[in-house]
Length: 338
Image 1 (cartoon, rainbow, N blue to C red):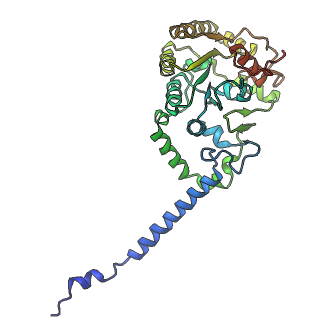
Image 2 (cartoon, rainbow, N blue to C red):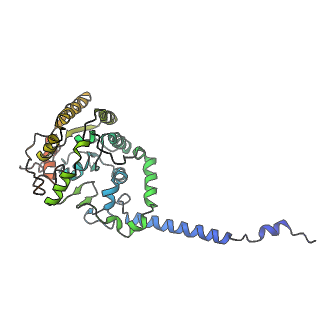
Image 3 (spheres, rainbow, N blue to C red):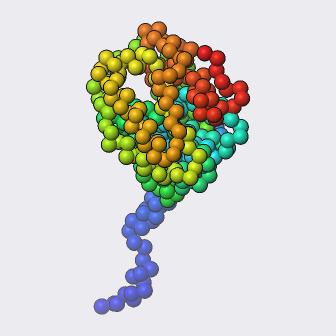
């Protein structure tokens, strides 16, 4: 019997090995091309200052509308702002960073996030600290942040660390929806308006049908005040200690105040105002309570957007300029004329 040397056996081709190598190479090539295309087109607006789908620093992005809790922390880390505006959609629609006084730390970024809840404030505070560039923080608080409204999926706490943000960038580069986003699907708008690279969204007027719908859809029954949520604000202010902090209660329209009263929530709203003042005082900060004492009651949900309001909740940048003026942070040309 003839014995085959072991070296000859090792030299013989293994069935399927060539296919496996080719398959791995093809998959790796596709992933690398997808990553390169994502970096170039940047549908999430987190890799480039001016992606090709934007024009004059603005663009429509469904991804920013629906995934801002993943995207905005990365934009903050990329921009390394000196001034950070924190709050809900009221902030990203109403406070234009361009209206800030030029002497404030630059650049400024609007970190407003839709339906931001109080428990997410500490993550934004730790993110501001971790980025290291933030010197001035403006925080706009809404009553709804401190209620039992069903919360959205919260900000991930690991986005407050450089490692967590690096992991998120990788996930966005190799996202399963990357092909659709690269074809422009990510820019199909779900809400009217254009996003800017500084986190602000320009919002057009809504017609009466939409403002009525928004008012009718509000779940006042779920807007019960939960004082235990104040602990999150306390934690956030502690994390931001040493920075320049301006904190205010956002203006409410008369139409929205009527809804709160009709739903039996006005006493809770008033208690919330007092509780926020108490937390603020513990840190030696001035609370600017702008919720009701303002000259902008021109909104009727049955008539569509007004001069000062987009809908029941969201005020326009003209009111935002007044807010900044009350805080002493507005540019010389920012004060509105009611």
